[in-house]
Image 1 (tube, rainbow, N blue to C red):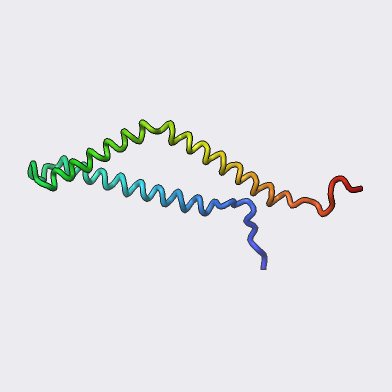
Image 2 (image 1 turned 45 degrees about the vertical axis):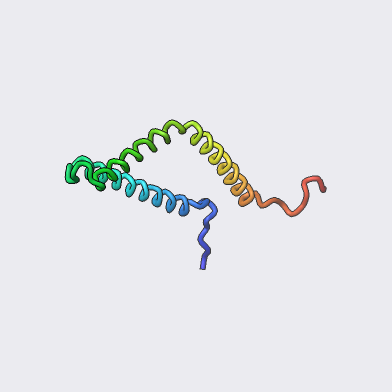
Length: 110
């Protein structure tokens, strides 16, 4: 039996699973927003009812939240850059320690 060599993978399966999860959450979120907007605009709720007021309030809250999010993108991207740099350093250390096994003796001894 041969062991499967996984030296070059570096956790790509985990990254793929996380990306699929995030994309699934994004699709579900966009679907919910579109459903709420279409419910609000369809006119099926009587004006002034609790359902119409709640649907309008949810859509307005989402609109305000997205504008607040985009006003803070500088901070969010700065944090993201720091996280990416830390991950890059961790990956480089992992690759070097995996492939740089080292020699048995010291470099100064003859």
